[in-house]
Structures are given as C-alpha cells and as structure tokens.
Image 1 (cartoon, rainbow, N blue to C red):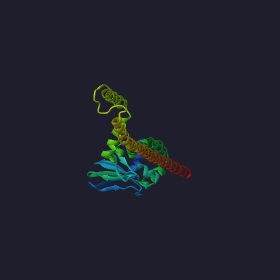
Image 2 (image 1 turned 135 degrees about the vertical axis):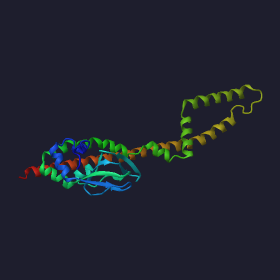
Image 3 (image 1 turned 45 degrees about the vertical axis):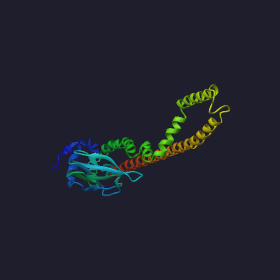
Image 4 (image 1 turned 180 degrees about the vertical axis):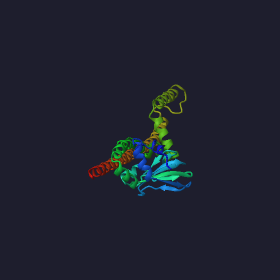
Length: 269
C-alpha cells in the first residue's frame, strides 16, 4: 500500500486533499530501477513522471555544444518528469538511476482519472504549476556556459603573452618607467665625455623603432582577441536568452492545454 504522504513533497500535488490523493493512489504503480538503468531519455514521450521513494536519480542535459550538464540529483521524496507528464511533451532531460531506486510511476491516464473524478484537483495543480515558470531562470543559468571559462580553455601561451604585453604597454607604470629610462639615457649621453650615442641619439631612435615595430602587432593581436571575446559573450548570451524564451513558451502552452482540458471536463455532465 502506498503511503498518501508521498505526495506531500511533490509541489504539483501539495494542495490535493485526502480524497483526491486517495483517487491518485489507486491508479499509480510502484516501479523499480537498477543502478545504471535509464528511467527516461531526452525526447522520450512515455508520458510518465516518477516520485522517488528510495534511491537516487540524476537528471542531465546536453547543452548547445553537446556537453552533458548535471541538472539535478533526485533523492527520496523528489520527483522528475512532472512537466512533461502534464504538458504531454517530450522529456527535456535524461534521467538515470545512480543506485537501486524504487519509484512511484504516474502516467497521463492516472491524471485523467483524477481530473474526471475530482475536477477541482486540476485547479489546485495549475496553481502550483506556476512554480515551473520561476524555475526557468535557474534552468537557464545551468545550461549556460561561462564565457570566461570558454576563453581560458582555448587560450594559448602566445595569447597570454600578447595580453600581458598589451596590458603593461597601456599602463601608467610603462609610461613612467619608459620616460625615466629615456631621460636617464639622454642625460648620460649629454654629460659624459665620450658618449656612445651622441646627439641626435641615432642608436636610441633605432631602439625605439624596433620597439614600436614589435609592440604594435602584439597590441593588435590582443585587440583581436578582445573582439573575439566580445563575440563569444554575445553568442552565449543569445543562446541563453533563446533557450529561456523557448522554455517559457513551452510552459505557457502546457498551462493552456491544462485549462482547455479542465473546461471540457467541467462541461461534461
């Protein structure tokens, strides 16, 4: 016998009363998953959600670079697949049992029977569904990639040196130090008896020309890298915003679908 309290920590069911939970308990089944067994995968359309009674399930998602990101670890009394169940949409994540797990499986038929016998349960569930809209921002942050981390992963020794030279060459430390060196160099060659670089300081002009010839392309390299960083940040920002917009539209469609079903059931005698 399934304990009705199992629904207490599932947000979508927390407002159901004892009678409504009793109807739901009569429909659901207990299902076991072995360690390493797939519960559902991204794009799956089994129409089922799961409440964990014992064990753990991890949820993962592949980002736009096809890198697997750990979304959440569902342990005892946690749930997964609820939004896909209510919206009749494919699962956006992959669920895998990371240890022997016992779950309560809920399918769409179970929800349909509940709404048929207790129509007001649908209104209570809809009021809790709004939580999914707020969690969209959390999901958006989890799937986004840190631009600084991406840049660091692709950075070479030459890139680091170019940035260091550009940073130092554009600082007051460099300007003051270089000015002091020039004054000392010129002063020595003016006041000593046998200067190695007398006025008009041809050797000094040669050194300055060589320094400028080397420094200019290094600074341009650093500027090009900065442009690439800005483009990467803009691209990642666009991907995050696009993903967030898609998820919000999906949630709104699910809520609209639930409202339509409730209206049809309320009109039925």
